[in-house]
Image 1 (cartoon, rainbow, N blue to C red):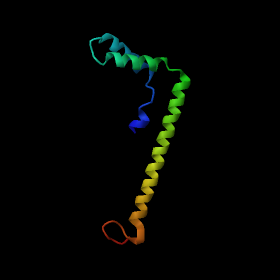
Image 2 (cartoon, rainbow, N blue to C red):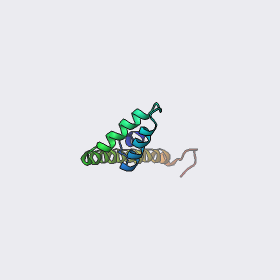
Image 3 (cartoon, one colour):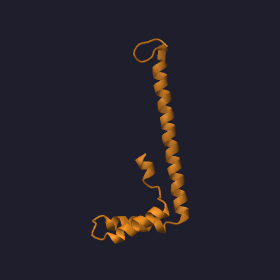
Image 4 (cartoon, rainbow, N blue to C red):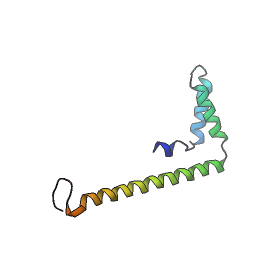
Amino acid sequence: MAQAQAPIPRDVGSAQANLDAARASRNDPDAGAVAAKSESQLAAPAGYKERVRQQVAAQMGKLGQTYAWSATQVDALEHADGQRFGGHAA
């Protein structure tokens, strides 16, 4: 999940709020990094944001497929030879 969420551009309002807070808190050691990230998010063109959104959607789709495949494998193991985990017949 974290890998898919990391590149998601945040909304303009929160990026602007972060930038304003970073500029107001110049003594904060993280202010420079926050300001730089917020400025780049605000400057990102709409096409880039859409491309990232599509990449994240594809990544989430892959994650969903992996979960479905895993569930199928677990289900097959549970029903192998008519047995369930714990040795009870189905």
